[in-house]
Length: 231
Image (cartoon, rainbow, N blue to C red; front, side, top):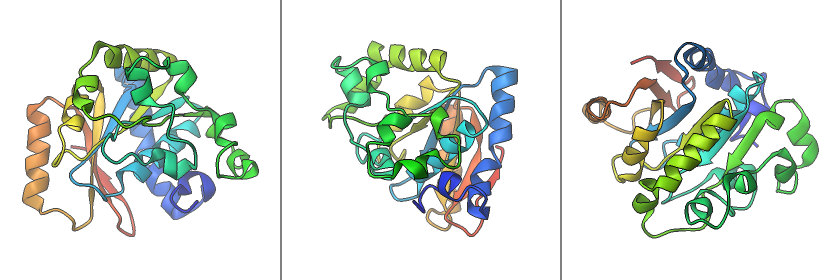
């Protein structure tokens, strides 16, 4: 439960850290139609999955409908955070075995998982959160990411939900996230405090800008206070 403070300890300082960027996201949505946002990071273990989940929860608490997608094909973790099954999920949709509306999990599905139902219902907000887990393991995710079915799935989700939050693979060790950046409206670059040299962060940012990724900002994670600023 401690990995999801935005819901389970929503009045805490750790929860507020995730909420600070929400007004900017809501404003971008209203003014520029921003709906799909990816969480990008350098290497595994920087806390990106937890950040994506808490951000999705924080947005859902404003009354907006949010779908959280686990697109980390190498090391998916969203299903573990919420105590639910990994399948069906994104890969099952991309392989043509499911449609998105039958694979997306709702609060009623979460109630069948490991988290006790009364903990899900209070405080309110999770009824606006939907989850698309990663699904069955696939050997060549890049082929699926670049597929027409992926484009149609993301477009359908953007049309149905107010926001689409995507947890990705690390960009320094995997090309999956780089391919996904062309399919989102904006992205947050996340890094663990002290984990990567400044020159590496600047190189990552430069690469993303060369790919014309519209960065919402940089989040420094795993400090006493999450620091963020716009690019």
